[in-house]
Amino acid sequence: MKKLIAIYFLTFSIFPYYETYKVNTPSNKKAYLPYHKIDSSAAKMRSFIIEISKYAKKINPKFNIIPQNGVELCFNELEFSKGTHKNYVCSIDGIGIESLFYPSKKKNTKERLEALNLLKDSKKILVSDYAKKKKYTNRSVQRNDKEGFTSFPRGKDNYDYSKIPTNLNNENSRNINSLNEVKNFLYLINFSNFESKEQLLKKLKNTNYDLLLIDLFFNETPFTLKEINELKIKQNGGKRLVISYINIGAAEKFRYYWNPDWKLGSPSWLKKEYEGYKDEFWTQFWEEPWQKIIYGNSNSYMKKILDAGFDGAYLDNVECYYFLNFN
Image (cartoon, rainbow, N blue to C red; front, side):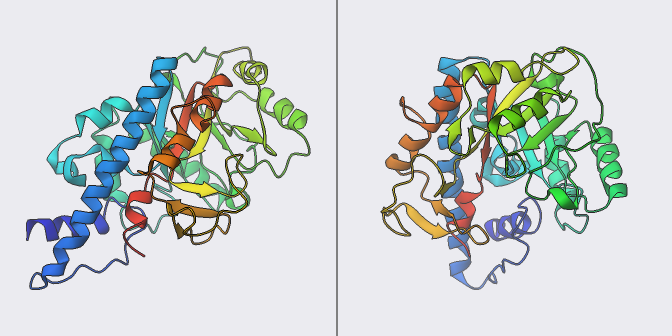
């Protein structure tokens, strides 16, 4: 019964997308299976991220590891009343959260907020709210500031992280040398609004964001060490951090590692279609071939990020561990 309560609690609270999952009744023994699957998959994802962190920090001890969403991984048994999972929490430097306060109809905001407040004193919390109206953008900044979180509120025209907003909250000229010093950030991973890499770089250089979160590639061409180093200076002369996005839970057809002969189920670790993203597949992330794509060798995604001089990596789709088990 304790496990069943945990399933219900996680499904309707911390997890961002799982409100519709139905928990079986206590009389149905099959109800215990989902929790076992979740817990086992969660342990694999934690181990994956811990190994990514070890690899990166061996090369650059100051490198920042920031998983996006999946805050429940920070807690034993995926429940924040059980205390923090020390090895995992020690392996990461911050936590990225999408849509914490906006859209405002999320059923799990209270529970996620409680979990984040248990972590914020030791980990930087970066929140990217989706605020469809300008008044909600301002409210998002205020609410996140109140909680001690750093926010990037994006408007209705920036759902896919493709624009540089004209307004910058908490603008400053300070030198930013660590993640904890960041007061604002730009989340820009879709470069479709920029005609060339040169245009994009110029636009980015002319901003005063404390942290730039961008993709490693512009039209399949990676940024160079020189280009990234130049981005580390704000327009006002202050230093800043530059973080690279990386998808560790889903394989993307447009990446350098993609084999044109691949399809769902071939290789076997391309396990499940990613609903809403036709060019992506959920992976069995614990499989060695996928992990070798992500880290551990000279052609791995993480090595390319490190070689380009980024200050850290923003790990997306860590919730893969859940979506592989449930529809």
